[in-house]
Image 1 (spheres, rainbow, N blue to C red):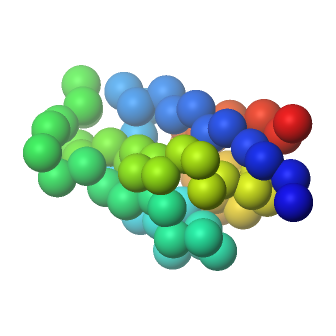
Image 2: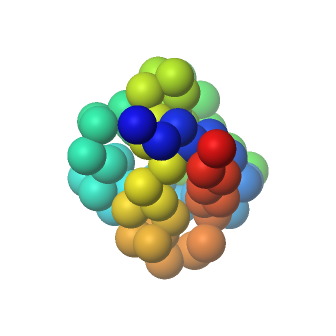
Length: 71
């Protein structure tokens, strides 16, 4: 199975959660322990080893915060 790596530009994230809902592996969540520069809880990958590189999260992000690399 393919592997992937997600990178977030966290300071642009508005915490909408669309990426969290789109992830088929359920490895994304909003980080409720901190705030970004805009005052939102940024999205983060809680289990990066499980990422399959599908990029569903990136295609759902309205602010182009997520970059997905496949390898």
